Each structure stands twice: as C-alpha cells, then as structure tokens.
Amino acid sequence: MQSESQEPILKTNFKIMLVLIISIVFISMLLLKNLFFKSTYLLKSFGELSIDPEIAFTNNKPTFLEFYAEWCEVCKEMAPQVSSLKDEYEKDINFVFLNVDNQKWGNYIQKFAVNGIPQVNLFDKEGNLISTFVGKQDEKKIRESIYNLEKEKNPNEKIINAEFSIIQENKKTEVNPRSHG
Image: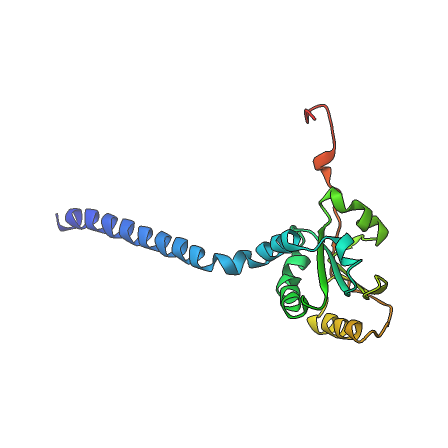
C-alpha cells in the first residue's frame, strides 16, 4: 500500500525535475546566444555596413577588401579578429566586405581571382594591390601588413593558408522545369 502512494509523488517529482532542466537549458541558450551566433552576426553586419568598393578605391585611403560568405566557417572564425582590426583602423583605412554569394560582386570576384575564402586584399591609397591573404590568417600577420600599408611599404606578398573554404556555386539562380522561374 505504501508503494502505491509513493508512485504519484515520484511521477510528480520527475515531471518537476524535467521541467526545471528544460527551463535551465532554454534560459542558458537565450543568455549565451551571442556567444554562439556572434560571428555570424558580425559577418552580416560587415556586409551591411561596408563601404562601396568604387568609393573605397577613389577616396585616397588604403583599402582592406575581404571576400567572405556567411556559411564559411573560417570566415566566422576570423570575424572577431577582423572586427577588432576594423574598430582600430577604420578612420584611416577603408574596410570593404563583399559576400561571394551576392551576384552584384561577381566582377570583383573575377577581377581578383577569388577561388577560396576568406580572401583579404590590401590596397595602398592609389588602389594598387599590395597584399593578398587567402584562408585563415593570424591577426598579427594582417596587423603587420596593415602597419606596412600605412607606412607605404610595398611588400607585394601573397599568403595562402591551406585552411580556407572553396567558393560554392550559387544555385539559387539556376532555372529548371520545377523552379517556376
């Protein structure tokens, strides 16, 4: 008889514990969402707040040009470093971010032979290409190149790291009989 009376209590305690655990997990996710999604948010904001490349190449300031994609894991990983560089140097250097998935930037993708991302190109104030970085880069190396750019040292270097994302073909514009497009 005693075991029958404890069974509803155990079920009730189990339900309370389950609800409590689910609530803690949900609240933790809400509070920590910035940690999980910060880099994706940074990439989106880069594109939205970017200077138009035509203006950047004609306003007599050096230019930092990054080709990226929101799905690129290496781009997401580098986003906080690039953001800190942007915050530090944006008064003296143009920061241009071009999403390779946007057809609008196709001519720049071809012009600068982008086939892996992230790709960072550094230009002097006359618009001459000084450095190209492809793939994951150490912030120190990019910072050093920016410093040299400001001092007008022209190393004309190309640095490729094996850790990069190959540009995927944008299939959103393909028309087939079932796409209604």
